[in-house]
Image (tube, rainbow, N blue to C red; front, side, top):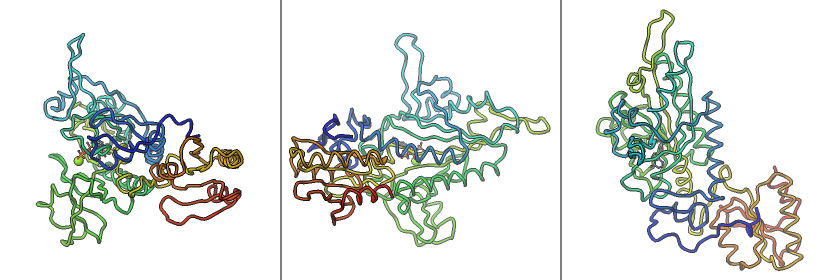
Length: 414
Ligand code: ATP
Ligand code: MG
């Protein structure tokens, strides 16, 4: 992508009302634009990151054998009344249609849609187990939406729902989902600082489990057991003051944000909607369910909270919008531009995703600053001074070195 064609521009300032570091950087660098508190547009660069995150999550969900669907956002009131959440969920967006005066909810989550949906397809034990997932936008009337992408009023979630004939089967799947989650967070660069965390299970399960990533931007407090690399959410520390896995009582407290959540729903929603299956003797039982969520925008926001410095973002390679930022410091020079163009072409031909700063009107300082702000993992500078050599530098490192065009190619295609 030639930067001279990119319609977004970097900004010196983020909006005055934007307090969150993740959103400030993402707005300034041109990844997102703020419509209002908790609602952001994904711009071309932001959408590329989103799609990288999405692809990683999708791959891991498919590896679990889950099948992808896409459920509606616009949902009838009756479904939410069935579960008691029309009145019982304070962050549910509800409204009345102007024409028909019918009440609707905007989906805050999808148990109210997925459970009756599966009722059309699950009849016998032979139809189980099965699992469906979607990557879809959710709406929540969050009281405070001041954490940028960490807490949106409209945001994308990957939600997976699994359906089983008995609890043992759900428990086994739950463990597989837990491992898939660990792989996702590892792949996006958050593995070491993301903790499997015991949290409140509501009324129907002793615990649920969250994946909590350490960051000062987080709103949660977790108590960490270093021996097991697990944590306990502050909300249950009174009833669970020691590590549930090894009994260790020397826990230390950190600020964190919930990046994902896995939950044994058991029969909570199947019994509400009459989702049953018949066993081999033709006796009906409630289907056992599990649900598993990850917030995609939140995940993007967390990555920025974790990977930035004073100059800007430092994307991990797995989610970076482009692999290489090719910067031509002397785009006015015909000779330098010819060289830079040929590098751009050869990288593209090799299948390397390149953002090419070919802007003629931008100064040297501005280009270097923008490159740091945008945060692509590898910067390759072409300039009059360097002749036919290219100065490469990793965004996360200080030292730069000179390479030839061939060396650059083998460096990024290895
Ligand atoms: P929190 O406790 O942070 O409010 P939650 O427990 O309500 O989140 P779930 O209903 O379990 O969240 O949703 C699954 C995942 O969706 C969460 O783990 C989180 O990553 C993401 N998520 C939830 N609410 C938001 C939001 N308002 N904005 C962005 N992502 C969200
Ligand atoms: Mg939670």
